[in-house]
Amino acid sequence: MTMFVVFIGPAGSGKTSLVKAYGDWIEENLYLRIARVNLDPGVSVLPYTPVFDIRTIYTLQDVMKTYGLGPNGAFIKAGELIVEKLDEIMKHEPFRNVFEWDMILVDTPGQMEAFILRPSSNQFFERLSKYGNVIGVFVIDASAINNYVDALVLWFLSILTQVKLNITTIPVINKIDHARNLLYAKTIIENPEEALEIIKKQSIEGIISDIAPELAALAIKTI
Image (cartoon, rainbow, N blue to C red; front, side, top):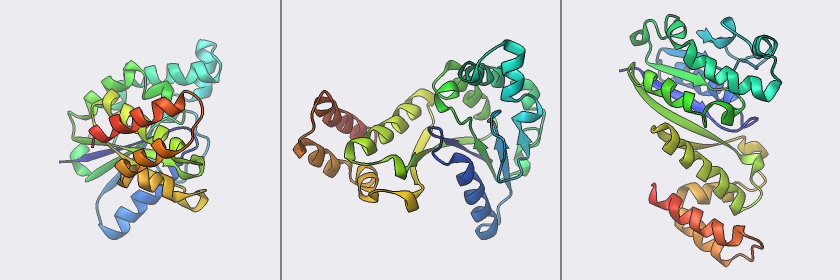
């Protein structure tokens, strides 16, 4: 059965670059048939050639002009349009002949919250699940992590995404060459119990001192 791998994450986390690098690696090393799908109507340049590109149906500029919206409102409307035009989208490759592909890599909009955290995303993923297995890859930007709390918040966001979409979601650390301290993210993901103990012992000021241990404890339950 075809596998859909959906790349999710905050703006600037490197989803698009990872789609290219991961797809290239699979083709070169595993010799699988890979299709890349771009669902970001606001991207200007893609480093890969998509089998389907949402910009062939509409761009962010189209949405802004048609509906009289600013960039943020246009991203939200663009996410809704994915569902409104889902039947049209599914008539295109690779969805039209999904079983011709071993894996379909889906690059989601840069403004994650405008699509993933809204109701329309659930309808999209429910439709995908009818065509094959769906897993999410939550891309964590290593350069955005300066301490254990930063790592915890980003990891917990991946858990919330999994709960919201009801699909298995794997946190992946990206941009490790720009990491301030990779140990923070590595510990949170590989040994959250240890990270929890470290957070408890740290002198953290403010409400985060109460919330951080609870977030870590809750995150551990999802493993």
